[in-house]
Length: 347
Image (cartoon, rainbow, N blue to C red):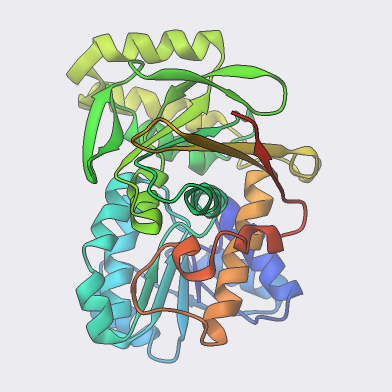
């Protein structure tokens, strides 16, 4: 079952799934939109409200795996995970919010009892970066620190931007000694070479803050996003605004830019899109290794990686409990996706 099949990412996943003859059941909250999407693709469909637990669980009785593509995942993940645990249905999603991933990780014991795999973040966040950190950890056994850099993009979907703005804060998440912590936004900056020379990047709350430690055991993790001069200035301003960013009027104002965007990048923009991720591991003695991964557009990669995981789960290739993509499928999993390439860099 694909829940959130009428959103931008959900639509891309549904179309690709049908091309792959995976015969997904399309599901979502809006009955008319789900019916229309299912009719266009020739799929079965179910309209489901997440505030009806018994009905949601009943709808999963004949489902082997759910892929949740409906953001914000802070609202959708918990009720679907609850239903999956009741019905022994494997759970996947496209989430990238650190608190959501941590909440799912805390349900590891329940998942093992139910014989269920909970694997969130099977899209661009975090499959490519998770595989890359597993690769650099393999290159440097005993590493204690991970730094991940992600190249910028101007091609965001409306839903992605709304999720980013919903999470906007005066702090960003990092991992220290295996434990989640926060630092002021704009405080941590460094440069990564995404293939065009060193570029300024600022620390952000990215899904790998939750997942990379589970994948590699490395206790200190930071994630950076390539930023323009204006974005660096905005990050630094945000650090001075403090709790003002959390007030209701400001939150309402922040929703306006997302509502004005088109639903997502065009097919031409996606075909031309390229993202680059750099991962660096460092051990206690200061030794470093660094590797770089080039991928297609994030939305195209999301559909490809999510469905690659779905296929493996349907074949029984899974591990019960809370899992991360690279911990189950290995560092080279992302290289099975067309258009990806990895290289080890000098340090």
